[in-house]
Length: 246
Image 1 (tube, rainbow, N blue to C red):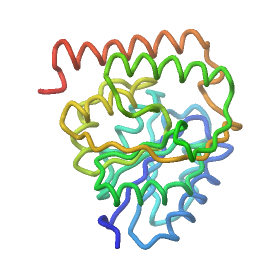
Image 2: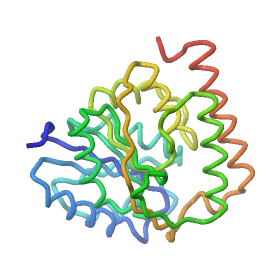
Image 3: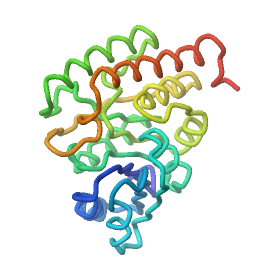
Image 4: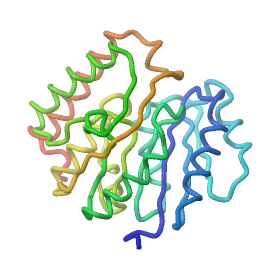
């Protein structure tokens, strides 16, 4: 028997009009096979195309759709969804389904077995199967090295867009999050660890980066600089001024 009764899964979505309906239906089909209550919370991060209208066309009582006009970033969208979530476990997964959502069964088992605070999908787990561009591998390695030096994470991979949080942890952590875009994953984990939520475990994923990504069309070096700036700001708030302790 599961130790939880209600799962909330947040799906941040930006420019996903081609896949969002399929994504929602796929997620709903997977979650409906489990013996617990669940909700899918889609947060459309800016009305740049018809993603919001397409998502609203899915009429299921397990699906809730939210959105706002101006794009604010994935971190903002996830925080927005967490605030709306009602589950005992609150997680998020990227739209587009580059990450196979069926792996959530493994993540939930790890959650139960370890009475975890957080379970994170990890590209570096020995059982993971991943396929993504070389440039992203380099970026991921470099950023992972920096965050380990700054924050001392035992978690090897912080950036996969598939994570589960115990409700009390999600509500406590995400209300403090300030980063709206690329470094919010690191900020959330750093804040959780700072607040004493240290039972963080990695789970295998299946990742096939073949779909559309808004990141892929942006300037590569601009992304790196913004990530470094946001990460430095997290370090300053965490280690220097102790902002998150307030």
